[in-house]
Image: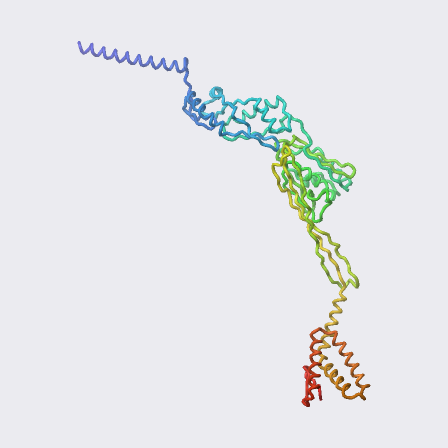
Length: 475
């Protein structure tokens, strides 16, 4: 009996405990699910770059509250308008954690929700991009775009606000006027075709490809060079990049010096440039009398681009002398010759009257054209005759020396033989004149032979004396 009572009591206690435990857990479950729900993220859940898988929402948000301040200090929001980039102040940016938690979904990549002050945005735009007047609607639109860009939670975010969707006034950002002597129908057709052409964002424009697509006939390279040079000068005053540009072999007129862009259709020499901006631009060209105008229109640029041509370094030509049988007398000019030049072009980027960057655009070198003068061959012929005469005089030097020595002895010892002596001296004088046309070396040998002969005769010796040529002097 006692065992039965004990068993019944034990079972009752166990069942009561299980009932109490079940009711308690059910109450907690009811409270968590329906009364005070405690949400938790599932597997593979990210907010920004942070993994919050299997974390309670409250715990995850508490973690982000601690890192929000550090994110503001280390993160950057770079905003670019046309050619200028500035750093947006994030010290007043707020991460809306409640909104972030509400829109977060388990198992996917989720973004933060940021809040930026429109007044801060307006001040930022005015200070950094003063060339543009932004409307209130544009400021609100830009602020919203910045908030969307920050959602990923990256440390460095870059936003371009100057796309074609921006509602601001366009203006002429560059304009040049160059003189031109071209006036043909083909020249004017190319100028009219270029007018009002749009260059899309980051698009590359090839001048020669554009001309070839027109299918015009009879347009010279010189005419195309005038148009390309004018466009090139206009492009230099912007932030456009130059992909291809060439110069001619001869130095151009002063207006084009340093800004020449030669076109050669047969060789494929082209002018190519790229629009690096996020907005499109429009090219405008016009011929008015003897002037050619090129202009580029688009959203205003923040910086000014000033082009300076350095001092022209003169490169003198050389004189080349040539000899030809086709020139009988005087000098024929085959090439007049002209000096060359070196010229450096520098672009200065200016912001609010302050130079912020100086860069070299090009270093052009125009080689000189050497002067060529052609002379007759007469001088060469005279020199050849002189050399032949010198050789003959050299062979006869010994005989002339012997005759001169004999003539001098005869004239000094026998006054009655004056007539013969005079003839001998005359012959000797003629030969001596012939020998004097020889080189200095032969003349020296001749004088030396005379000196030796006279010395030997004055010595009064009876021994035979020979000159250097082996001829007997005193037989």
